[in-house]
Length: 118
Image (cartoon, rainbow, N blue to C red; front, side, top):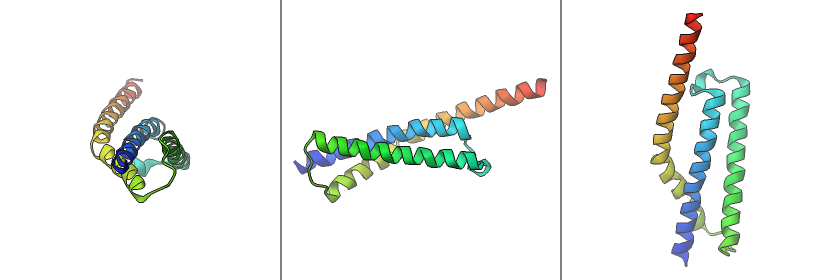
């Protein structure tokens, strides 16, 4: 049963990576990809995204625990969630970040081209 719980929690961590990527795309759309150019508004939006991610992750973990009757919080459950999120961030997130950067740069190039034409 503990292996099932660990795998379920690891899957919960992977799903949290998907939520992170959705918020990452929103953050890049609103704030841009260059952290050194962030304004106070951008930092507040980033902080709000981090809070939303944490709340969604906690709700997802509690929902999973209730659905599968995991009544006790064990260390391996937390490790499973962390491992799932880590594996997601080191694999699929790299692909998402690459395409977000490509699309963002393409949009900026078109925007700069329109400014130069006028």
